[in-house]
Image (cartoon, rainbow over all chains, first blue to last red; front, side, top):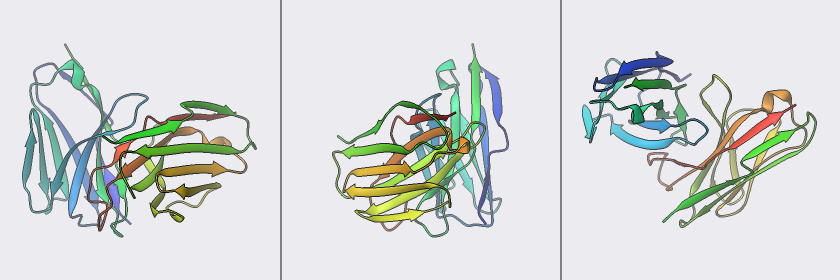
Length: 112
Length: 115
């Protein structure tokens, strides 16, 4: 069955540094991958989608890469700020193509 | 613009009691609708999804059920709650397409505690 792993439950960095979060998947070749941000007690908010034929995608201080050979996506936040502190989730479509499967998330804490 | 509503925001229920959580979407037609549960220390678990009125697909067998009586209304129910039903319940919608290609928009969630 499909498996998604975000291998760090928590990541602590200093303000101004680049945060790098990892999402690995197995037993599947998704056509795309999505990243969401979730603040405590709230629903996730969509950030970026990257397709299998795209190596990299950027949005302001965010950058996502997608390596279908390694079955891995990296999510980068450059010049991180305390306001970036949140849980970040990666998501893939299920094999039936009918819904998303989410990783458990990585909680990022940016200290000033 | 589109908005998604969930209620109640928080709920405390005794074991064995019934449950009804409601989700409504405004500003779009024929959305795909989803129910997720997020338990402490666990990821988002897809419970049900619906591509149209009366069309419900279940992802995980359990004592919960879902219904879609109207195009933009999605209801999560249980006849008898278990302790393990505690969690953060999230409703989401997406623009219908050939798959779940599009981003999902989540509601504010319902925090359910079963005692």
